[in-house]
Length: 357
Image 1 (cartoon, rainbow, N blue to C red):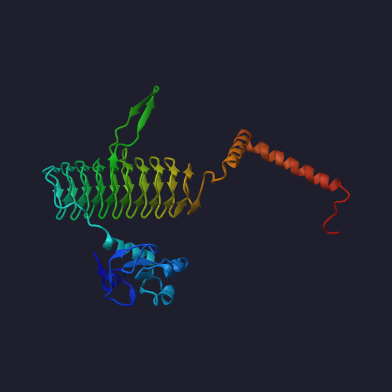
Image 2: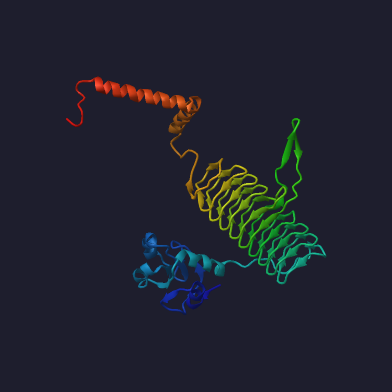
């Protein structure tokens, strides 16, 4: 697979400084690129690496063109990282699934759009709908009444249940479960009594869901994932959760039931969100944060203990335990008394002079 500079520059809406007929073979990092490859320079910070690179073509911002165009062909763009992201789609491998496998079991009442590719041993239930240009990898299960928009990409061993509705251009990676029963039980007389989950899941357009994720259907109302949300691997989203547009959730996060999360939030890895909370728009949680109350103001929030040398960490733990054993009002009172004694002592010493003298 190769592309001319003219083809690439049209794709990223850039300005070419050099030979437009030059053919590019691969998209690579600055370190590994060769004379027939293209890479990108994402700002001044990476200029030394770019000057040392063997790349034949570079995507670069306007401010760096003059320093790079004598070295190689430069495609000038507003955002090199965005241009790189756009080009990855040109160089990406096409899906290996073609047509509809003979081993796929598709209910006669299901509606399959044009140019849909379905792999071996896929099961599609009654009244399910799959939009055009979608790709479904082997061993995926799509339950009755599930609706999936066009241009979906669903990898192997995904289960989609509970009359889930999915928008267009959605990617779901291997082994994820969408629409399974939520964790709902009523305690009575020392036993847990299962609550049947009768809601569903609604997923918007341009959503990405990683591998081994679980998104549970609602108990009564639906679990909602809005447009543009991106979810990493190993994320648990419980029943009735609502996630706003373009929010990003990193791996191993857990979001408990009925929590509402705003738009354009970013959650670092392994964050834990308690249930029945509301988190406003533009909130960023650093990794391992634990959220136990609602967040009403945008900003960056953290919790947990930062990394330190092991012996220092053990001493800090002892300090934390001592603080927890002493009521905070008692500690404040002791500090106040100590401050008063210091002030009295200073007044009684003859060699302590007033600063005005």
